[in-house]
Image (tube, rainbow, N blue to C red; front, side, top):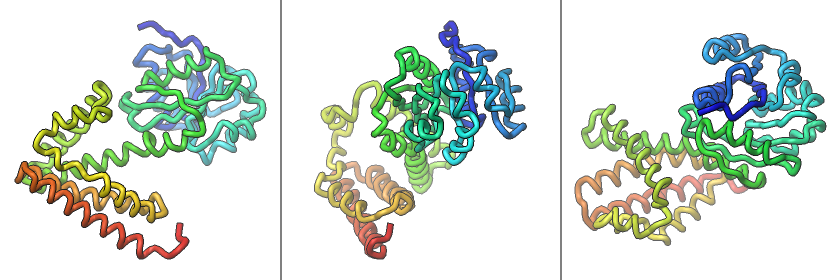
Length: 317
């Protein structure tokens, strides 16, 4: 593959996400090292990136921005105001791509009024292994060439989808936070396997590869959109599907828990317990008794949700 990106790109911030993107574009021959400049206040990070990728590094943000055609803002959200106060006046002629979670295009414009062409990107953690997905949104001043630059950069580390910025918080919650929930699911499946007698390493491999394979099936066959396919695959275990009324009941209970932290902590605990019971039911019965066991487990955990919700003070958020 040739080098389709001819623009000079400055990364303001050289953390893990920037490192992953740089590694992806270089490995994919999207651009050459001499077209990349990374700034970071930590000398050790600069040394690592220079050694690993042979890119230009330094701590002078304004110098890097003055050199670049594209500026990737790869700093933590809490550092954004300070960075924009420093370089905001120099962003009028460059394409700005921000990967700072929760930082809107309008907030960047408010702090750096000179910036006109801004793309907001939300990559997720699997870009570290070049299997991520990045959502992109942009302002009206963005050109088709600008969009293509962003697309080429992030396709080097996974898939890319355009999205309206008003939906970016939903993306952050789903694909941004989603890997943490998948990690919990894999751990829960592995724990269930260990409980059934499997060695830990074997159980972890079975769980991880099962999730990877299932995800690939979804992407390649649209499995979740095809109820017939699911019915065909599950066969006699079809009764394990949780009835819609029970799902609604669970969601109603979850709605009573105000904070994400509460739901995440409870979900981690109950999810692991539920996986034990479901795995045992499927492994030992293979018939309608599995459905009854699963439903009993769901109802038990629904009651647990009720108990947690009942202990919350009224108006507590």
